[in-house]
Length: 72
Image (cartoon, rainbow, N blue to C red; front, side, top):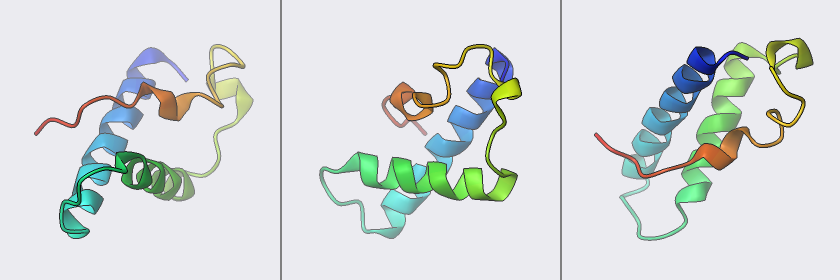
């Protein structure tokens, strides 16, 4: 997956995780719950990534570790 595609995927996870957090009533703590749920839902929509989409084999297991602060 090229850098632009990674950034787009990350942004989509960020948007969906924020929406999920709001739907849960904006609880304090456990942001990873919404982040990982959003990632799973988006991956389910587009299908599992093939290894040929990634520049490095280490990118696949660590997609979710790019989590940062959610901004509007």
